[in-house]
Image 1 (cartoon, one colour):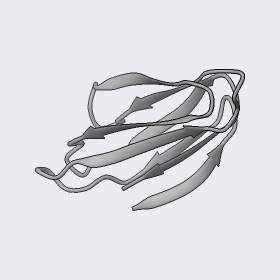
Image 2: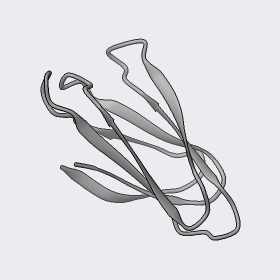
Image 3: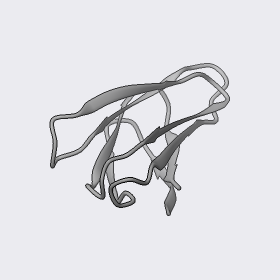
Image 4: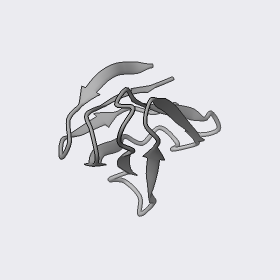
Length: 86
């Protein structure tokens, strides 16, 4: 759907999501084998938010129905990350 994009520490990206009733997969990849990473995911149109931790040298994905609302993804800890949605 969108990305992949490089996301340095402290930076944020905004991604579109699929319409209501269809889940959007957000994937976060951490290529640094030494340090875990973390992103904060929120939707400006709702009060929902969560943190996603990504261990070193792994990719973590979450599937959510954000009902077509944009989501903001901010790198809040650790190394630079790669982020994309499907």
